[in-house]
Image: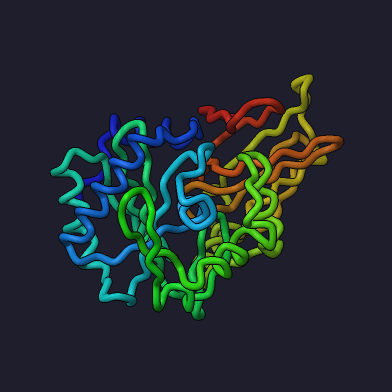
Length: 299
Protein backbone atom coordinates (compact mmCIF):
# COMPACT_ATOMS: atom_id res chain seq x y z
CA UNK A 1 0.00 0.00 0.00
CA UNK A 2 1.31 3.43 -0.92
CA UNK A 3 2.41 5.34 2.18
CA UNK A 4 2.33 9.06 2.84
CA UNK A 5 4.93 10.96 0.88
CA UNK A 6 7.06 13.25 3.10
CA UNK A 7 4.99 16.24 1.92
CA UNK A 8 1.69 14.45 2.61
CA UNK A 9 2.88 13.39 6.06
CA UNK A 10 3.88 16.96 6.85
CA UNK A 11 0.42 18.24 5.80
CA UNK A 12 -1.37 15.61 7.89
CA UNK A 13 0.78 16.05 10.99
CA UNK A 14 0.52 19.86 10.83
CA UNK A 15 -3.29 19.75 10.60
CA UNK A 16 -3.53 17.34 13.54
CA UNK A 17 -1.10 19.37 15.65
CA UNK A 18 -2.94 22.65 14.99
CA UNK A 19 -6.19 21.36 16.53
CA UNK A 20 -8.03 24.09 14.62
CA UNK A 21 -11.85 24.06 14.70
CA UNK A 22 -13.54 22.34 11.77
CA UNK A 23 -14.44 24.27 8.67
CA UNK A 24 -18.08 23.16 8.85
CA UNK A 25 -19.14 23.60 5.18
CA UNK A 26 -16.02 21.80 3.93
CA UNK A 27 -16.41 19.10 6.60
CA UNK A 28 -19.95 18.40 5.42
CA UNK A 29 -18.79 18.00 1.83
CA UNK A 30 -15.89 15.76 2.83
CA UNK A 31 -17.98 13.45 5.04
CA UNK A 32 -20.69 13.10 2.38
CA UNK A 33 -18.02 12.22 -0.21
CA UNK A 34 -16.51 9.65 2.15
CA UNK A 35 -19.97 8.14 2.67
CA UNK A 36 -20.40 7.91 -1.11
CA UNK A 37 -17.10 6.02 -1.46
CA UNK A 38 -17.88 3.71 1.45
CA UNK A 39 -21.41 2.97 0.23
CA UNK A 40 -20.14 2.13 -3.27
CA UNK A 41 -17.56 -0.23 -1.73
CA UNK A 42 -20.11 -1.89 0.57
CA UNK A 43 -18.23 -0.78 3.71
CA UNK A 44 -20.24 -0.17 6.89
CA UNK A 45 -18.91 2.63 9.08
CA UNK A 46 -20.26 4.60 12.02
CA UNK A 47 -19.74 8.02 13.53
CA UNK A 48 -17.70 7.84 16.71
CA UNK A 49 -16.30 10.03 19.47
CA UNK A 50 -16.86 13.78 18.95
CA UNK A 51 -18.57 13.36 15.58
CA UNK A 52 -21.08 10.94 17.11
CA UNK A 53 -21.55 13.27 20.08
CA UNK A 54 -22.39 16.16 17.78
CA UNK A 55 -24.72 14.09 15.60
CA UNK A 56 -26.68 12.68 18.55
CA UNK A 57 -26.67 15.63 20.97
CA UNK A 58 -26.57 18.66 18.65
CA UNK A 59 -27.69 17.23 15.28
CA UNK A 60 -24.63 19.01 13.87
CA UNK A 61 -20.84 19.09 14.01
CA UNK A 62 -19.50 20.46 17.30
CA UNK A 63 -18.14 23.91 16.36
CA UNK A 64 -14.88 23.51 18.31
CA UNK A 65 -14.22 19.92 17.22
CA UNK A 66 -11.02 19.62 15.18
CA UNK A 67 -11.54 16.49 13.09
CA UNK A 68 -14.09 13.94 11.89
CA UNK A 69 -14.10 10.54 13.59
CA UNK A 70 -15.51 7.45 11.90
CA UNK A 71 -15.05 3.78 12.68
CA UNK A 72 -15.65 0.19 11.65
CA UNK A 73 -15.07 -3.10 13.44
CA UNK A 74 -13.12 -5.93 11.83
CA UNK A 75 -15.22 -9.08 11.75
CA UNK A 76 -18.53 -7.21 11.88
CA UNK A 77 -20.75 -6.26 8.94
CA UNK A 78 -18.55 -8.23 6.55
CA UNK A 79 -15.41 -6.15 7.10
CA UNK A 80 -12.00 -7.78 6.73
CA UNK A 81 -8.54 -6.24 6.44
CA UNK A 82 -8.42 -7.22 2.76
CA UNK A 83 -11.38 -4.93 2.02
CA UNK A 84 -9.76 -1.80 3.43
CA UNK A 85 -6.88 -1.29 0.99
CA UNK A 86 -9.04 -0.99 -2.18
CA UNK A 87 -11.11 1.71 -0.47
CA UNK A 88 -7.94 3.60 0.46
CA UNK A 89 -6.87 3.47 -3.19
CA UNK A 90 -10.24 4.91 -4.24
CA UNK A 91 -9.79 7.79 -1.80
CA UNK A 92 -6.39 8.54 -3.32
CA UNK A 93 -7.88 8.46 -6.83
CA UNK A 94 -10.45 11.04 -5.67
CA UNK A 95 -7.77 13.44 -4.43
CA UNK A 96 -7.60 12.57 -0.74
CA UNK A 97 -4.31 12.34 1.11
CA UNK A 98 -4.47 8.95 2.81
CA UNK A 99 -2.66 5.76 3.73
CA UNK A 100 -3.16 2.93 6.20
CA UNK A 101 -1.25 1.78 9.25
CA UNK A 102 -1.57 -1.52 11.11
CA UNK A 103 -1.42 -1.58 14.91
CA UNK A 104 -2.18 -4.29 17.44
CA UNK A 105 -5.62 -2.85 18.22
CA UNK A 106 -6.85 -1.34 14.93
CA UNK A 107 -6.09 -0.52 11.32
CA UNK A 108 -5.70 3.26 11.14
CA UNK A 109 -6.68 5.17 8.00
CA UNK A 110 -6.06 8.94 8.13
CA UNK A 111 -8.03 10.68 5.37
CA UNK A 112 -7.23 14.31 4.54
CA UNK A 113 -8.67 16.92 2.22
CA UNK A 114 -7.17 20.12 3.62
CA UNK A 115 -8.18 21.66 5.88
CA UNK A 116 -10.37 18.70 6.91
CA UNK A 117 -8.89 15.64 8.62
CA UNK A 118 -10.81 12.41 9.09
CA UNK A 119 -9.73 9.46 11.24
CA UNK A 120 -11.14 6.11 10.10
CA UNK A 121 -10.23 3.44 12.61
CA UNK A 122 -11.04 -0.20 11.90
CA UNK A 123 -10.98 -1.81 15.32
CA UNK A 124 -9.85 -5.27 16.29
CA UNK A 125 -11.97 -6.94 18.97
CA UNK A 126 -9.98 -7.75 22.12
CA UNK A 127 -11.85 -9.51 24.95
CA UNK A 128 -15.23 -8.32 23.60
CA UNK A 129 -14.07 -4.68 23.58
CA UNK A 130 -12.41 -2.21 21.25
CA UNK A 131 -9.95 0.49 22.32
CA UNK A 132 -10.87 4.04 21.37
CA UNK A 133 -8.50 6.98 21.71
CA UNK A 134 -6.85 7.65 24.03
CA UNK A 135 -7.40 4.27 25.77
CA UNK A 136 -11.14 3.82 26.36
CA UNK A 137 -12.40 0.25 26.50
CA UNK A 138 -15.71 0.19 24.62
CA UNK A 139 -17.85 -2.99 24.61
CA UNK A 140 -18.20 -4.41 21.10
CA UNK A 141 -21.94 -4.89 21.66
CA UNK A 142 -22.44 -1.20 20.80
CA UNK A 143 -21.43 -1.96 17.19
CA UNK A 144 -23.22 -5.21 16.48
CA UNK A 145 -26.57 -3.61 15.52
CA UNK A 146 -25.88 -0.02 14.56
CA UNK A 147 -28.51 2.73 14.64
CA UNK A 148 -29.23 5.20 11.84
CA UNK A 149 -29.51 8.94 12.55
CA UNK A 150 -30.17 11.92 10.29
CA UNK A 151 -27.08 14.08 10.05
CA UNK A 152 -25.85 16.80 7.61
CA UNK A 153 -28.42 15.83 5.01
CA UNK A 154 -27.89 12.08 5.04
CA UNK A 155 -28.36 8.96 7.14
CA UNK A 156 -25.38 7.76 9.16
CA UNK A 157 -24.82 4.88 11.53
CA UNK A 158 -23.92 5.44 15.18
CA UNK A 159 -23.21 2.96 18.01
CA UNK A 160 -26.35 1.53 19.55
CA UNK A 161 -27.73 2.63 21.94
CA UNK A 162 -25.93 5.90 21.25
CA UNK A 163 -26.72 7.44 24.64
CA UNK A 164 -25.10 4.56 26.51
CA UNK A 165 -22.09 4.59 24.20
CA UNK A 166 -21.59 8.33 24.77
CA UNK A 167 -21.86 7.91 28.54
CA UNK A 168 -19.25 5.13 28.40
CA UNK A 169 -16.90 7.37 26.41
CA UNK A 170 -17.57 10.81 27.96
CA UNK A 171 -19.22 10.15 31.31
CA UNK A 172 -22.69 10.94 32.69
CA UNK A 173 -22.46 14.60 31.63
CA UNK A 174 -22.00 13.75 27.94
CA UNK A 175 -25.11 15.79 27.09
CA UNK A 176 -23.52 18.98 28.53
CA UNK A 177 -21.44 20.84 25.88
CA UNK A 178 -17.83 21.25 27.03
CA UNK A 179 -15.12 22.97 24.97
CA UNK A 180 -11.70 21.62 24.13
CA UNK A 181 -9.47 21.74 27.18
CA UNK A 182 -12.33 20.67 29.45
CA UNK A 183 -13.96 17.53 28.04
CA UNK A 184 -10.59 15.72 27.84
CA UNK A 185 -10.47 15.47 31.65
CA UNK A 186 -13.85 13.70 31.64
CA UNK A 187 -12.58 11.19 29.09
CA UNK A 188 -9.31 10.51 30.92
CA UNK A 189 -11.06 10.20 34.30
CA UNK A 190 -12.92 7.14 32.99
CA UNK A 191 -9.71 5.34 32.00
CA UNK A 192 -7.97 3.29 34.72
CA UNK A 193 -4.41 4.18 35.65
CA UNK A 194 -1.74 1.91 34.25
CA UNK A 195 -1.71 -0.33 31.18
CA UNK A 196 -5.14 -1.05 29.72
CA UNK A 197 -4.33 -1.99 26.12
CA UNK A 198 -4.27 -5.52 24.73
CA UNK A 199 -1.74 -8.15 25.65
CA UNK A 200 0.37 -7.58 22.52
CA UNK A 201 0.97 -3.90 23.35
CA UNK A 202 1.75 -4.66 26.99
CA UNK A 203 4.27 -7.29 25.89
CA UNK A 204 5.95 -4.84 23.50
CA UNK A 205 6.21 -2.26 26.25
CA UNK A 206 7.70 -4.78 28.69
CA UNK A 207 10.29 -5.94 26.14
CA UNK A 208 11.28 -2.35 25.35
CA UNK A 209 11.62 -1.41 29.01
CA UNK A 210 13.65 -4.47 30.03
CA UNK A 211 15.61 -5.47 26.95
CA UNK A 212 15.62 -2.48 24.57
CA UNK A 213 15.86 0.62 26.78
CA UNK A 214 17.60 2.58 24.02
CA UNK A 215 14.30 2.48 22.10
CA UNK A 216 12.56 4.58 24.74
CA UNK A 217 11.34 8.09 23.93
CA UNK A 218 13.17 10.73 25.98
CA UNK A 219 11.57 13.93 27.31
CA UNK A 220 13.43 16.64 29.21
CA UNK A 221 10.98 18.59 31.38
CA UNK A 222 11.79 22.21 32.21
CA UNK A 223 9.97 24.73 34.39
CA UNK A 224 9.13 28.35 33.48
CA UNK A 225 12.74 29.38 34.21
CA UNK A 226 14.20 26.65 32.03
CA UNK A 227 15.31 24.53 34.99
CA UNK A 228 15.00 20.72 34.78
CA UNK A 229 12.30 19.29 37.05
CA UNK A 230 13.44 16.09 38.76
CA UNK A 231 10.07 15.54 40.49
CA UNK A 232 8.25 15.17 37.17
CA UNK A 233 5.80 12.35 36.47
CA UNK A 234 4.46 11.80 32.96
CA UNK A 235 1.42 9.57 32.51
CA UNK A 236 0.84 8.12 29.06
CA UNK A 237 -2.89 7.41 29.17
CA UNK A 238 -3.44 3.68 28.77
CA UNK A 239 0.23 2.75 29.17
CA UNK A 240 1.43 3.90 32.59
CA UNK A 241 3.29 6.58 34.54
CA UNK A 242 7.00 7.33 34.19
CA UNK A 243 9.24 9.37 36.53
CA UNK A 244 12.07 11.77 35.81
CA UNK A 245 15.68 11.27 36.85
CA UNK A 246 17.74 13.95 38.60
CA UNK A 247 18.29 15.74 35.29
CA UNK A 248 14.56 16.10 34.67
CA UNK A 249 14.61 13.45 31.94
CA UNK A 250 11.73 11.00 31.57
CA UNK A 251 11.92 7.77 29.56
CA UNK A 252 8.63 6.79 27.89
CA UNK A 253 8.19 3.24 26.68
CA UNK A 254 5.67 3.52 23.83
CA UNK A 255 5.09 0.52 21.53
CA UNK A 256 5.25 2.44 18.23
CA UNK A 257 5.10 5.91 16.68
CA UNK A 258 1.59 7.21 17.17
CA UNK A 259 -0.55 9.84 18.90
CA UNK A 260 -0.81 9.63 22.69
CA UNK A 261 -2.42 11.59 25.52
CA UNK A 262 0.14 12.75 28.09
CA UNK A 263 -0.37 14.18 31.58
CA UNK A 264 2.70 16.06 32.80
CA UNK A 265 2.99 16.85 36.50
CA UNK A 266 5.65 18.51 38.63
CA UNK A 267 5.67 20.91 41.58
CA UNK A 268 2.75 23.29 41.21
CA UNK A 269 2.15 22.35 37.57
CA UNK A 270 -0.14 19.96 35.70
CA UNK A 271 -0.78 19.91 31.96
CA UNK A 272 -2.62 17.51 29.64
CA UNK A 273 -1.35 17.15 26.08
CA UNK A 274 -4.32 15.27 24.66
CA UNK A 275 -3.02 14.63 21.13
CA UNK A 276 0.77 14.33 21.08
CA UNK A 277 2.83 12.39 18.56
CA UNK A 278 5.58 10.37 20.22
CA UNK A 279 7.91 7.88 18.59
CA UNK A 280 10.23 5.30 20.12
CA UNK A 281 13.77 6.75 20.29
CA UNK A 282 12.33 10.26 19.82
CA UNK A 283 13.83 13.10 21.88
CA UNK A 284 11.72 16.01 23.11
CA UNK A 285 11.68 19.01 25.44
CA UNK A 286 8.61 20.09 27.39
CA UNK A 287 8.21 23.70 28.55
CA UNK A 288 5.12 25.08 30.31
CA UNK A 289 2.97 27.19 28.04
CA UNK A 290 3.95 25.50 24.79
CA UNK A 291 1.22 23.68 22.86
CA UNK A 292 3.29 20.58 22.08
CA UNK A 293 6.51 18.81 22.87
CA UNK A 294 9.46 20.21 20.97
CA UNK A 295 11.36 17.56 19.03
CA UNK A 296 15.15 17.89 19.28
CA UNK A 297 18.06 16.02 17.73
CA UNK A 298 19.77 15.24 21.01
CA UNK A 299 19.60 15.72 24.79
